[in-house]
Structure formats: C-alpha cells, structure tokens
Length: 287
Image 1: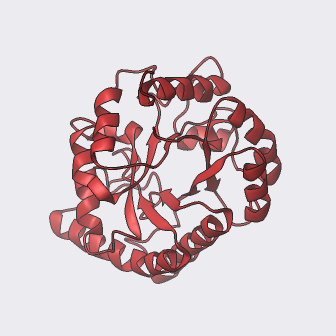
Image 2: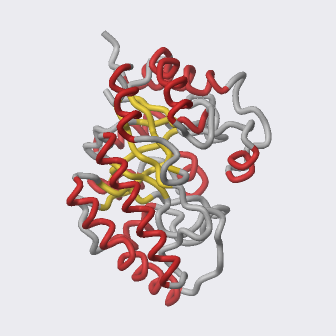
C-alpha cells in the first residue's frame, strides 16, 4: 500500500504557518497520510512549527516542493542567476531536513514557463550545465540525508525536460542516491506514450510521485490507466507516497501559472477527499 498525500496548493498559495495549522486537521480528516510542503519563498513557513503541526495530526512530510519561477535557472543563465538558484535549492534541502521530509521535488533546472528551441548540440550543453549546477546541491542533499527529485514538465511549461528519457539522459552521471526523478502523471499524460513504460525506464531513480486526473482534478475522474501505472510503480519497487497535486483558482498568481481557468471538481476539498478515496480503493488489496 502506498502512503497517500496531498499538496497544500489545492487550497492555498503560498503556504504559511497559519495555513498549514488550519489545513492539517482537514487533510487528516480526508484520510491522507502525508503532505507536500511548497517553499515559494524562503521564510514563508517555519520548519519546526510545521513539524509539530504534522506530528500533532499524524501526518508525514512527503516532500518539500521547490518552486522554480523564471530567475531560478540552472541552465542557459548567467553565474549570479545560477548561484541564486543553487542557494535557494540548498535552502529547500535544509528545510526538508528540519521538517523531516525525505525529498525535495520540482523542476529544478529552468523557470516554469521558460521555453526555447534547441538543436541537439545545444541541448547536450544544457544537460551538462544542469549536471554541473545540480552537483553541489546534490552533495549538500546527500550530507543532509535528503534526495533531490527532478521533475520533467510538459512542453508548454519547459522545453528542457519533458520526458523520463530526457531526464534520465540529463541526470546521467549524478549520484542516484541523492538525485532521482519526480514523476507527475499530469505531465506524463501529455508527453509520454503511456504511463507504464516510463516508470520501468526510471526504475530506482523514482524518488517521488505526484498524481491527479488528466485535467488536474481528482484522481479517478479521468481516462488514465491507474491499474497499469500502480502496477508499474510496484514493479519498480517504489514504496513512497502518491501525492495529489492540484491548484486553487482562487489565487490569481497560481491560477495563471498553472492555467486553472475553471473549477476542477465540485470543491477544492473534493479534489483531495475524492482522490484519496479513489487511491485507497486502487492500492489496498480487497480483504
């Protein structure tokens, strides 16, 4: 049975101490085991306070989510930009260690929404830049007992890493124990031929998994091959959480960034509650 988590972006952005304190009991009430904790800006929330809130409600910190707007780039960027991005990622690692999260996940290579055309030579150079930029962060993560999980995004959000195959190529040479992949079925549904083969290709590199419907709604209200996907994860020996990531349309900034133009379920609570119930049915063997 996979632990099941939710991202606080379903309801609020940015995450704050007060927001987490209000959401945690509701999230536990929906039946979740864990929470993803986004760090939009350093200092938005206190790791020690967050850990106490999670402990009080029997919730695990599934992952710290690194937020990568334009200007937090590790590739095709000047040295000051790369340095700022590395400093931010190190901060996320430190927060993860303090709150007890095993993973920092996100598209930690180029700002979300930043796209440009590349020939094969330019792409190879940018992959080399990514490895060079991530290497010191990966060492910091290793020392902290945290694993980085690099997330491929769909073609509308990045032109660098869209598929598992591209991500595996880009990360080749970085230590797998400290640098893995974050798989997100929303992006996989757009970019991969199916949900099964890429899971097998990623194998032990899978460090974190995010789930939702194909339209960002509740898992299960969709056309996705959940039995095949979950079987592939088991075959890959993935034992981490399945975390529902969706977004609220009530925050203008995040709604525009995630292209949330309409309600994705009857309520934001329903995305979590219905999704958790569906994933429980899919992952718990019948008695």
